[in-house]
Amino acid sequence: MENQKLENILNLALEVSESDRQRSGQLGVGFYEKERRWELIVKYHGDIKRLQSSVVQVEELIAGYAVITISESLIDTFTQLDEVEYVEKPKRLYASILAGKQESCIFPVTVREPFLTGRGVLVAVIDSGERVIILLS
Image (cartoon, rainbow, N blue to C red; front, side):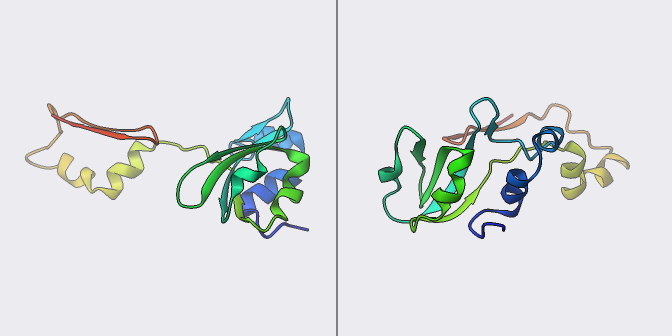
């Protein structure tokens, strides 16, 4: 039976065969096959640091979130804890230039007079998760 504290894609990743997980572009993200461990994002309340042990590594974030690394066999037991509200797996992010151009209405201004190209404009947004650097030129 699916665990209600786990996101749907994580439930699926735990249920499918290893070969299906490997073929998928998303289902294996956050899974360390050799150790049979998962890196997971947890929404919690209370003191999650008390769960830190040799089998559960806890990295507290902010606002009641943490990243845990845990053996696949312990996930169900972990989610039974009162402190644990919700668990999800990390996602692989894809950059899509085409979708961005369509959403920002760039196509209409590039196919008619004055044929705006953006030549000479430099824009960069670098987000490491800890800080954001924005460069404009």
